[in-house]
Length: 196
Ligand SMILES: [Fe+2]
Ligand SMILES: [Fe+2]
Image (cartoon, rainbow, N blue to C red):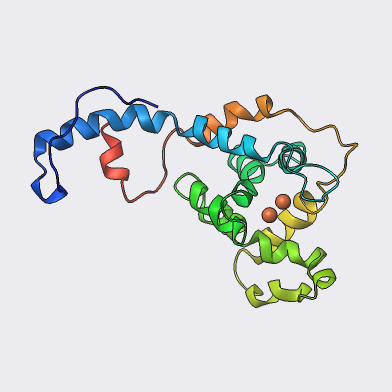
């Protein structure tokens, strides 16, 4: 991470000047360019994290993404599949929302919705073993993205626990992650980013 370079001089934002923000804006480009690296590094935290499952969370992520790729899904979809459980480390009680927030500026509204709600839909396959309602997803029945989310869990996520599946390595997906995270489609800061 870049720590050198010029610094703004304000002690409170209310004192900020155009010159201060030229300094900050000028350094944002380099920082933003490292986003894909930071996402990939964080994904690496899932390596070796089994939590009782047959394969670790990294292998599950790679298998989910590989299955989506081999089924002909486009690049943003495959990247969403790769990152859908990236929030397991920091969002242990709401992991889908973490992935959704990271992906939101870079993917379609449908892919964002799938990431955000996959937890409730995946629950169809196991909630009843934990004393929960496997039909929790029914709360979303009729939503325009209901079927897409059910399909993601059914075809790629819930089946991605096979220790014998030949998943592609992380290196295979890295260029896809870099392309998807290269520039936001929608962001509060999109206008500021346009010029860099
Ligand atoms: Fe998940
Ligand atoms: Fe998953």
